[in-house]
Image (tube, rainbow, N blue to C red):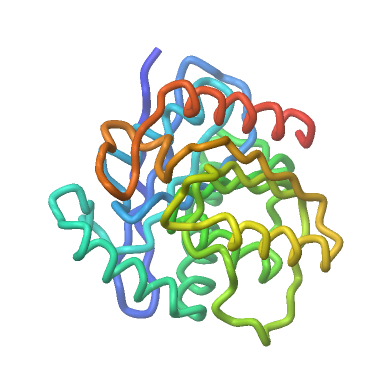
Length: 243
């Protein structure tokens, strides 16, 4: 039994990117695919670890790269990370274009390797990656269910674009999140209801931003082991109802 991290290269708009298939090879049957938009650190040991924690033996995670090959932001300051992440977040064409290329490349490789049942596919997004992912599902991405965890900037940057959202949505958030205050989640709820989406929000009382980010302990985000474990239980229950 071993954790596999299988790199998947792709290109978008002249840039080189490298996503990752993350899965446990002790399972031989095909599993559901979970497309993952990571937080602002991009593809690195931190986010592959989160992918492995989310997947366990139940899923194959398709970890998207939206920052460029070898970006891995663990050695960057919050200011540097925020500048890049916000720049990407403001560019709806990049989010949709690069996100679709990532999804297609990762799904094709996982299917080629016989790892996934492509009829069962969900998505999960963390922090800024959750904001990217919400734009993808607004644009009609075919995820049967989407989970966003302490999402950053959940409101669309393209309000005049036609909303084609489908599938179910679960948002898991903290009431003391200073990055994404509760009124932004209220607005997301209103948007989902307006478009007839089957949505749920789990709001952890007095919880901060970043409760699933291991070792986080600063004025922006703080890890909470109990809430992190509860988050993944909620995620699994959500997907088990769909798949």
